[in-house]
Length: 169
Image (tube, rainbow, N blue to C red; front, side, top):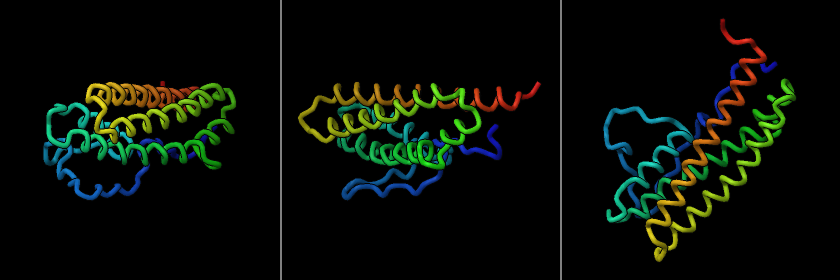
């Protein structure tokens, strides 16, 4: 049984990545001042989704996608470190609930696929001759893959804590 509070890997705090030279950071990435934004990796995923959704005819659209992709790449690397590391969440879950091995292996395998998808989107975005529709399509696939991964991770945690602790009645 896992003891003590466990922080969701996607909510782990980290310093924000500074904008690249020549690219200004948005004061209000959602466009609405005072509207709270999700923190950490979840916020980075939302920011990339917003950047991809902007019309491709907007000046510097591709640069905006790249600007939002970089912190997502770093945030996902941190997520992998927090979950797969020697003292990571998955090791703790497996120590207390070995029956979750299949789910942990599934999530770990998804990590490699997601890292490859992030790099593929970055390569397409960096190629100025690539078609905006290709970039939008691949970024959309990445965002859907991240959403599925997050759901599977949440389901695994629910399975560990609901079944092991009994939940509320």
